[in-house]
Length: 332
Length: 303
Image (cartoon, rainbow over all chains, first blue to last red; front, side, top):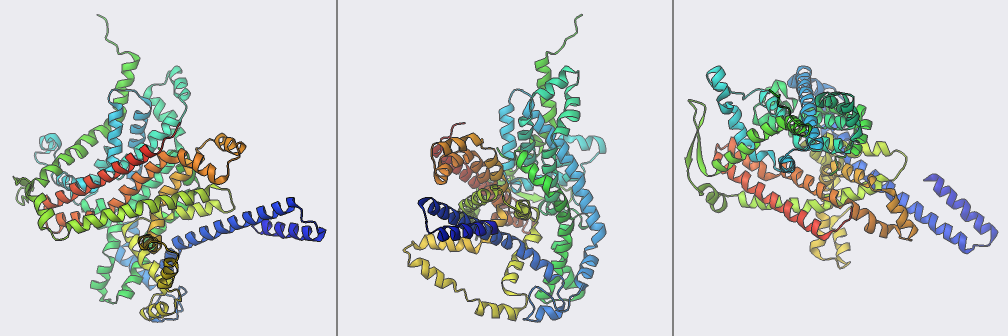
């Protein structure tokens, strides 16, 4: 932009020096003004929106370092005068941070691997095979995206409270199994392609596989590769952009999810989101800190701790990720 | 005896079914069955059987529906306000994300960084984080302590009323003004709700073949005309994708869902909760069908 401004003035001054502001010159000047204005407009809008997104995040981070004195001092704004790490100390203790974080990440990671395998398989099946009812079944995939999960939350709760599909569990164990209070329901749902936003992932994979050239598979077939071999050794490695997209999405959304965690009463030690939601109540009960302002400072510290791994993953993968989203045709 | 062998075509058919088998089973067991169960629950009185761990259903017909629509205190208001919020937000989010995608699609320095920032809200979409961000937005605008909030409120110098007056004298109708003021009020939530939509639009813009633009340029179309005649028709299908995504996304976090959840797990009134879920889902699907129908009818694009 600076270059554009400088260029504009140089040309302007040159034109004046010559004393001959020809029609052509005037055209160039107007065009330059237009360019500068549009660049300026773009910069202002982008900076403004980036500010709106980033400001609260910085606010949270700054808050988490405030001491009690700073919180009551009207002159303190964003930069604490007497910074303290006490909020973090307390938050780490109450959240039981490291073990809970480890558990949540492992949980999200396992589910992510499952999602990638199942959803890519189903997406590939829809993209490359012709079978009766294919169109209708794919419409059902879209329906699972559109129907909000809360419509079926009650039946899901009932189903997993006494898990006995077609009497299989009764036949083996003699009684139906109860999966409440564990992560098992989530694994089962994901295994059958009905996990958190699985429909969307199936859709992404389907779009991506459709975009790959058919010749690859034909070549593999001519060389004697079977369908499954082709899928695992040729198609899946070729789908890296889609895999990265789905990996980040499913990892992050699973990690952030509290809906399923609450529905299936997943224990606190497995989900940091649940612990965060009871952090304030814990602080009020255990330490008798009743001031809302101070409570929020602890909450902010907890939130920073929760965001940390996700943001780190995002920073490392963001280049591949955004490229992946754009190339994998999340688009219809 | 001749061994029976499948032809290549039917082999591929079988393989196709094998590939989608996990999803198919899950869909039937967890989705179709659950939908039927929800309808059944909504038509009956459900009592948890504490001793055996199961539940008992007593058929009550449409009682739950009648109760929800005539006697329940807040269901109708919450449903209407949720749906209204959604309908109000859809055009805002779609226009905003289209606008941003057009801006970000140009090449400029620091584009990767800007895109990373724009996608940040999608990454930070946990309930707890969203709540904290909301309160932090207020904090950043004013300051953390109570007294500094008072000071900020007095000295902000931006009288909203003044601007409303200013635009009011432009002869804009009051309702339009209220809409715009409301939109700027919720700018944070609109921005954070449009991360995925922006990316979808960027991908759509990049998939438009460049020769169309070349032709438009050769024929002497201005940038404005190019946008209306080339860009917009080419991305109409993605507008529909985005609307679907927006509606579903805003519905999942709406007040009706909270109401249904609380009715079931705080008040243990499962039948009523099922009614809430079903009615709100039907309303949403109706809106979706309506919007998509209108858009496909209004726009004729050739591919």
